[in-house]
Length: 84
Image (cartoon, rainbow, N blue to C red; front, side, top):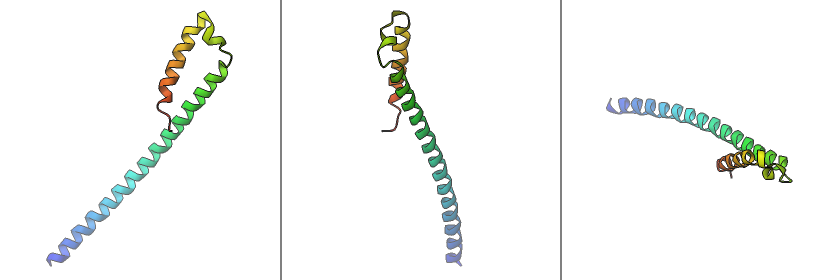
């Protein structure tokens, strides 16, 4: 009788842990997809920013240069969050 109760408890515990593991795996995969999409968006923005100022026109302009420099700083900070 003692073995039967232990087996039932062990079976219920193992089943619950299995469901929890599957749930956590699904959440992890969802977050991996989200991070991957964010990384792609950051890389796309970085590429576009470089294309916009490929001649250095914005960077050298006094009136808009300071703004462009700040945007580049923000982009450099975002680049640290891309997947490598």
